[in-house]
Image (cartoon, rainbow over all chains, first blue to last red; front, side, top):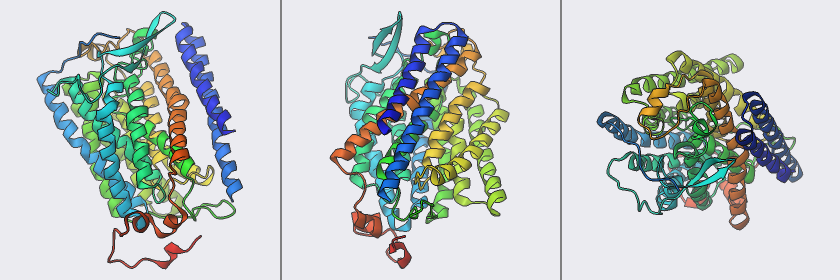
Length: 59
Length: 450
């Protein structure tokens, strides 16, 4: 789950970069940048949950 | 590669920059004291020694290879061409400052300031890893930060990299702007702290068997609060020098920068004190101190470009956010961060970056004059918003995975957490063989496993 989370973080960033590089109109660019940030938040949630799970196993 | 014609500074701006950079070590001293004060008494000497060693490693590694990869605006860099636009992604300078004349030029001033700034970024994870992070491991981790993570991101923001060029290349306002280092110093340091805390795990006895956090209060509130006063002096220097060097702010703006920095810290500290007074019946010294530093952190990005009322608002929000995220991280996410550094630096740093997009009125001509920085695209402030969001996305989507991977790899080859015995004895006795307070009796309950 941790690896998935970090891959999501990276994927979100790449979506943001692609939006900036490939989309010229302001609205679609803004939507895709926000979508990329959303994917990053999802990745962050995965990473956090993976660390909570590891701590639970240790206990 | 880009040609090497650099920006110039007026005599007054040069004098202010030099004076401001001389103040920055106060921020290092303040942060070191805060880290030591918020840790346990049995790790106090270890904490201060770690700070000194980490600063030394950061300066030497930055000299050896950090500046080579960070560079400075309009100096040689490697470029990628994407969809017909150039993306400046890493500097192409020789190692060991070999191409740098240390003569008071903006590039040389930048190298000096960055040598101190990278030390400041490296001190941030020390507070989070307190009481369990081995001295040698913290030095190795700092070498990775000063030699890889920091120069790369700082080049993108301050070295004429692709984030700074978002305005010119894609019409996003002035590109990503961060005058004093909310992102490149503090958010980066805070995210490294998060990675380190995840890898180290919580202190022994921090959580009960059913996952409830127990309070392990800092051992010296006087250190912490005096550290806060020192950080104000350091931050004034950092914000003034950064704004002049990296955003081309004219020297007359120094007064505005100083006023905004002070107001943001003041409002954040008062907010934190008021919130803790309302919630717990009495103001909490450590959370108020965290509020103060979070105000400083949040003020850094926009200090030269907002009016004082906006600075108060930025500080106020920082105080609110930090007070609640510290508790949230500890109670809900099981992140044991003794100094609250993740909230204070990563969260408040990101808020500072975002606040610039919300409140700043960036003067096009002013950013254009010193520069050869070539930031101003004639774009609108609406695009500035987007540029700031791209910066935050880069911190989360690139810097966090990179710093986590580097520290994870380091941990595979060299265990970063101290042995169980060190956890129980305290870092002073276990790693240094002595105590910070040899005349004081040690409380027996510090040795009891919770």
